[in-house]
Every structure is written in C-alpha cells, then in structure tokens.
Image (cartoon, rainbow, N blue to C red):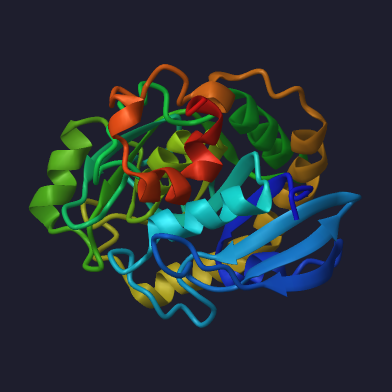
Length: 287
C-alpha cells in the first residue's frame, strides 16, 4: 500500500466521482486507536489515492470526537505524502460568498479539548509551524479550482473553533476584528499532525454561510447543507484535476523533512514502546 501517494479527507461524497476506480477498502488500527472510518483506496487518472470520510460515513462524529491522530497516522501507514482536505466553512468577510472556495494559508486555534501532537509520553519534539499549509500543494489546488470555474480566494486565515455549536454573535464579531477570513471546526489539528508526520497538507475551504455577524441572520444548518450539496460537484472536479498534478510535482518543500532536528529527547531515554509506535514517523531519525 506504500504506493498510495495522495490522501483526500472530507465528506463521504468526495469519492463518488466518475473518474475514480475504487480498488479496496482498508481498515487500519493505530497506536492512537481507530480512524474515523475505513480508507477508500482507488485509482484516479493513474494515481493511487486514499479517501477518508472525516466524520465517518453518515457523519457520526462531532469535530471534538474525531481521532485526528489516528486519521493522519493511517494516511502515513498507507504511504501518503500529500493530503488534500475539503471542509465546510463560514465566511468572515463580505467578499467571500457562499459557494466560493478559499485556500487559507494560516490558522488561529480556538479549540480546547483535542490531542494535536503525536509526541509526549517520553519523547519531545518541537516542530516548526509558522507556515502550516504546504504552499506548493495549495498553489496547484487553487489553480485547479480556477480552471474548474470556481470563484477562488487564495490565502487568508482560518480560525478553528471547538464546536459543535456555532459562534456567539460576540465571538463572531471578535474574530472579525482579528481580520480572519473563514471559520471552521476541523482543519487545524489535521494540519499540525500532518506536519509532524512530514505530510504536505492543503485546505480547500468551501464557504457555506456568513457567520452570525452578518445581517443575513443566524447560521442555518439547512442552508449549510444546501450549499454543501451544491459545492460537491465542484469539489470533485477540483480534486480530479489536482491529484495528477500533485503526484507529478517534485516534493522539495520543507514538509518532507519537518521532523529533522526537532526531537530534543535523549535517544537512549525514549521508551522502546514509543519508538515502535512512532516508527513510521521517527524511524529514520532514530539511527
């Protein structure tokens, strides 16, 4: 399975595309527990890809219940080098309308209850995260979005809140004062863990609503789901265009060596069980 180069994480509908030839469903167990669902492994334009339904098929898991570590670790076991993420977001700016697509480059963390590192329990690493999105992968995916006919915004800040409730009006106005661009509940932990796993990560943020700051009124779940259904076909087109370009690119970004010189723990003191559990991530740095 090490020839699976590209991972896609998002809604379960993302792998319902005509160009994809499904080959198998893979069940994985990790040292961090079970991922959200089985990985759908298939062939897309000659490229092996793995899809994961972020919230499980049927949307069974809240953002706080997601096992982010298991999800990203599972992609690493499959050999994935780049993750293309798709998720619904609220717009924090008038210029970003529902059905627009944003490719943010930065994050602000407003979560509280989520493990977001593979390290601890006897091993410490401090990984650089100044630029959390892989710029090369984001550029390719944003270009595919424009080619597909989407209204694309490249760059900006994604604020990640705990959820599952939407923001209060006071919070929404506060975030607006911080000049953030979109608001969501899932992508930050994925980006952090992908960086620790030396996997390139890019977010395709599908705008479904203006957050409750807007005069159009409170956020409606019916509205969000309606725009998501409308965006599904466009998201599939963008993924189908992006995957071959991602597979063909030269991966010379810093994501590929993000763990180099970051483990500060004396190697002789790292527990053997931790070395085994994290071998797919740290094995090459333990010699």
